[in-house]
Image (tube, rainbow over all chains, first blue to last red; front, top):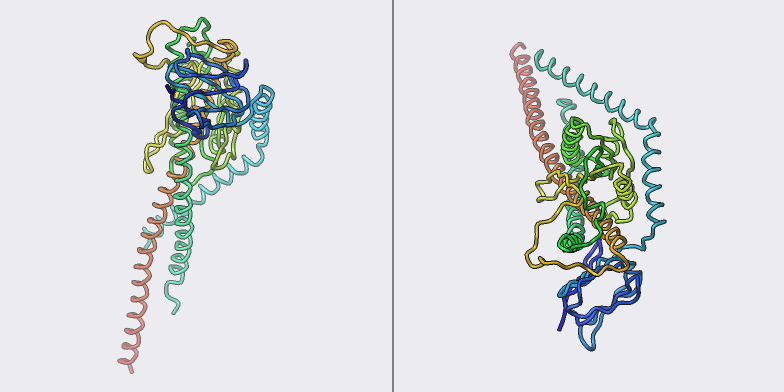
Amino acid sequence: MTVHVDIVSAEKEIFSGLAEMIFAPAEMGELGISPRHAPLITKLNPGEVRVKVSETESYPFFISGGILEVQPHLVTILADTAVRAADIDEAAVLEAKAKAEEALSDKSGKIDFASAESQLQQAVMQLRTLDRLRKRGG
Amino acid sequence: MAVGKEIRTKIASIKNTQKITRAMEMVAASKMRKTKDRMQATRPYSVKIGQIIKHLAHANPEYKHTFLVPREVKRVGVIVVSSDRGLCGGLNSNLFRKTLGEFIQWENANIEVDVCTIGSKAFSFFGNLKVNLVGQASKLGDSPHLHDIVGIIKIMLDAYEAGNIDELYVVSNEFVNTMTQRPTIEQLLPVVAHELDENLSGHWDYIYEPDAKEVLDHLLTRFIESKVYQGLVENNACEQAARMVAMKSASDNAGNLIGELQLIYNKARQAAITQEISEIVAGAAAV
């Protein structure tokens, strides 16, 4: 008896196919999932996921954490693309905020850009008017 | 012969411009293929996580996550996804116009707005408006990674959990085909209920490990992240497609312009020759 397994990460599909058993590093300890397992959702730790396709053949995948969902005939592993931890996420937040503030306070470059653009627009309008006058004259 | 010197230099300069636009068109075409592949590569994840969320809507958890419960709207968060570079036709301006339309509706309903931007164009547009900009990410390149945008998503999720915003939207371009990109606004939070799947009806629930709150927290965060990431990758493909089309029409226009100028130049040249001949003939007749 087999169960359908999908392993995907946010940036690509890693594995899709039938398997006899799946081993995954769940947060509460290593899990082995056989077909017709009860519905289960758990977080995964960084580690090795092993998909046993047959008695002799099995594929190992390294994941840096993620989520495992089990339905009786379907096992889905959502792998993270990078090691994630609360403090790393927090650092990313600070960085994004700092970037916004920094760029907002740096008005000098922005104003120059805006005034240059308006000057350009005026020049274009003048040229267009000149063109029209010339046509009328000629 | 010094006839039409200005016209000839003008033709030469337009030819140079045409060379540039043609090169940009070809670069955009090859990049579009890559960004489209990348867009397709991210699809399985968002399909799968969407499925799990759908399953979850059928389960009967005792714990209701805040991300799933709608509440009265006083303030909304918007993540605007744009390109980093210009010269891609009306791609960004169409998107911003649509976003501003929503902003006006919210303003009329007395709802305040927090904005996070992805991409330089959105930043320079919304940075100059009087909106509350809470975070930005730009210069992500053609192959953005999920961890580049984790920060701004977490800003919004934290704000939602703290009750500072009551709804979260993402605004980005949808890739319909090479010629068509559609600006779309999608609601991320609270997570919209999915249509029911008959196979899963009945009373059942997952086994949650370690516990429901932690797993749902994690899962829903990933779900939102994948939605925004999908939007970003799709917007990238849109950018290249729009640039390709814009540059193609620019090259075509340059070609037309050159044709017209060439005609004017030939006419002027012929007129000059005719005039010279008639002058000579008139001079000879006078002698």
